[in-house]
Length: 475
Image (cartoon, rainbow, N blue to C red; front, side, top):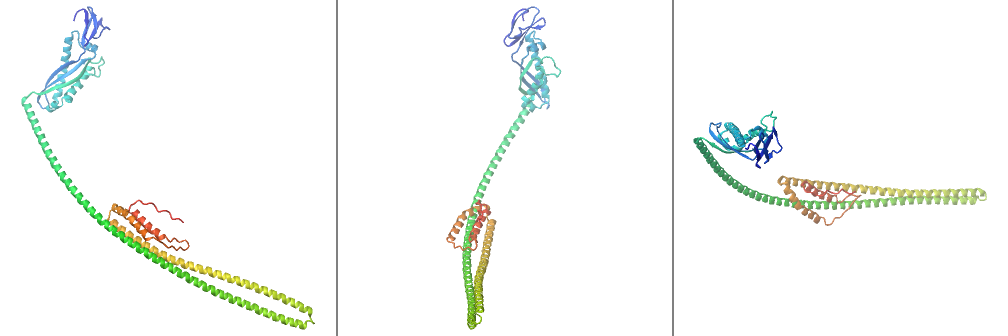
């Protein structure tokens, strides 16, 4: 460097101009200055620098290895680097910095290799050696080497990267042994791969055979299920036919019972009507006899009165001359008595007629009550027989359902019942073309039909089918 005169730095250099112990403002990247005698001027390179190092060390297995690495660094704070290093001669300062960093890298690499095995040195270059070197040296050169470092940031140097280029075993015998072991490992892996392939093929063949066997079993199971479903379908149809026959027989028996009940009711009503007619005739005869008796008594009384009147008239005529006034009074008295007697007789006759009508009405009411009681008794017997028939039908249906549930699955029951419900409905429709109804005092003659329909709906509900709820009975 010139002792005085104009000094200019390149764009990749930082110029520092000091005069009288102070840095002048002209200092900067690629700057120029005029150096006077007594001034200090330093040019610091800020471009990327390359440093290669080689460290020979014995590993933890007592095997010598040579580790070759590459470090890339640069000066990011020229003022700090100028203060820490002597850049009066830039070439010499750069060489000193490289020598210092190289010694640090070699020492740290030797310490790391001494704690690693040969395998780790060969396979863990980046994380085992380069990463540890970066974590150990970078804080020192960047200013975080000590906790009590209160000066400017380190050396003003930043490590960009550290790469391990080569790890070489120094002993040829050891290297050949390692190669042989590696080859044996490769052969072992090849044999294991071949065995794994054979096991895979055998497993695939076994899986294929298992799939074929499962397919065959599934086909056999499907055939068996279809055959069982056919048998169950035939059995269900037989049960349905028996149920229809039973329903028809019950309906016929119910119709016969209803006919017998109607015949018995008609006979009972005819007998009651005959008894009522006989009683009415008897009562009429008694009333006629009583009226005749009353009329006879009235005629006798009238005859007696007439006789008495004639006698009185004769006596009066005989005694007229003697007691005209007395005869007139006696005649008036007799006339009044006769009128009173006649009025009394008429009153008695009206009371007798009213009593006869009342007795007749009571007899009719008693006869009607008796007929109603007998009809209710007959209807109660008919209802009891119908209830017994319904209960027997429900018991047979429940027994059939239990037998079906014991032999069939719920899905088959639901499917079969859903298929047979239209036939049951058609059977009901065919059996009930015309119904003759006789109701006594508001009794519901269609109760057995509602009970039968409710039984079918209950059977469908017990099988798990979704059916609409029954409508509430209207009163």
